[in-house]
Image (cartoon, rainbow, N blue to C red):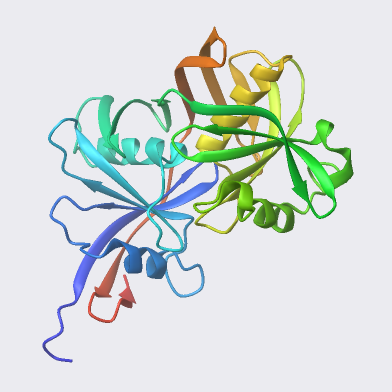
Length: 293
């Protein structure tokens, strides 16, 4: 026990429109086993508590690299809210001294601009869009849509699916979302699941069940982008789209529709708040937090 190395790890707890993260400068590779560390630090009862872990690491082609791990330790896809939070983190920590920066995640270079406590993030062009597919579920057929916005997303509009019952406020997002997330249609990796209500000509309301968190989150950046683009594709919702999230905050999604399901210049704009600053003492050999400072 006396020879065990205890790591002192500083972090910021951050929130992107209610989607919360533990953010760490890992350029010196203090965190060497991110998966078990994410499970421990994101635990809301015994750790710091978060939807995911963001590690800022060195990059040879951009200002830094973002690595995102879900609360269950799985390596996540692109995280839009996380990308905005880590960009503000890089600016606050003077890792990047300009308000405009680039970072790479999953072999793609993203651009971000910090505007006080908000960040505009230029997203990867969406791909693999599929509209109006029938998804059999518990004796009913759900009209669903699919799109990859850096992470895979199933999008379900309540006005197309009266049989699942209730308003967005009353919907059993965790129960239905979990079933769809594991549906054989999305096997083996599964999908994130977004439930959407349309508002006026440029507003939608959204609730998301996130793969990897395995629960509903208060906001999802790539889910907001997915839902906004599908809403535009179906008609009646124009860019920029205001996405009202479960946290009560709104995200703004802008894009250019080039026709035939081709969307470019996609941006995600919203808050990137610092919740608090902290430090932990971590035992990597037992994957346990010794103390929170």
